[in-house]
Image (cartoon, rainbow, N blue to C red; front, side, top):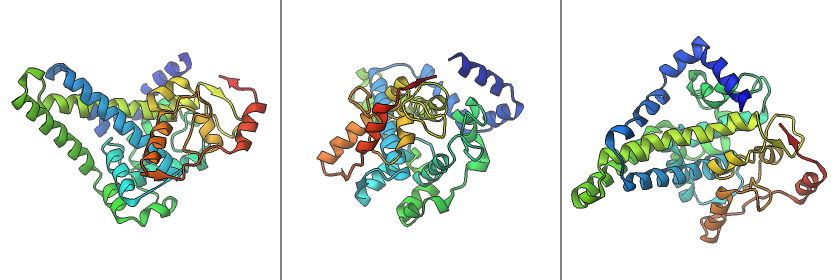
Length: 302
């Protein structure tokens, strides 16, 4: 942890990083999240925070990452659209932009071409700095030809603000309705927007960004890979399984990232439940040779 603090302190002294952060919409997202201190507390707001966090983290980890980026399972066009819409409500742009950048990362992981490596740059850049950079705002269409054929996905990426606004409106209308008909609950439309959108979105930002930063700096390496990917149990808890990052970099095609029962992977459990419901199918998992490799290689601590 001291290593992470040192790198972050160094990065924040960089004038370019400070200016970039102050001019980004993400800065204002953090600023508006402070609105929770002005709209008050209610258990309804806490529930809204929890629900929007859980649903959107799952949409990002299972949808944007394991499905759109790695095609680790199959689904219908309708459910594909639902995953895209809900994931985009996290204000991390659309599934095509997200998948294109992630595929680029895997091709050049921790090399000079990697757009968010803490190895070639620093932890601040890997965590959030690259997202603030306008140079990475465009979509690399050559990396996502399997996605660009869907006009509805192109629509979501082009108008990525619509899922965000739809969530804000849903939260406001829900809160206003509860305030009108059940005032004893102590909530309001503005309160639910602050808790269920702004605060929730900031939390979702940082737990997903930790996969790019933390899990390429600290943790254990089960596999010898050509990058610095690590397994982190606490990042896995926050991201529903994404912290088993060294496992993932060894075999990116798996819909399951935790290899053993004690490696909690809630996103995979969710996908298994959706498979039972017939909403997804053909979930790919680690082949036998990967388990044999894991058994023959002692983990490396860092």
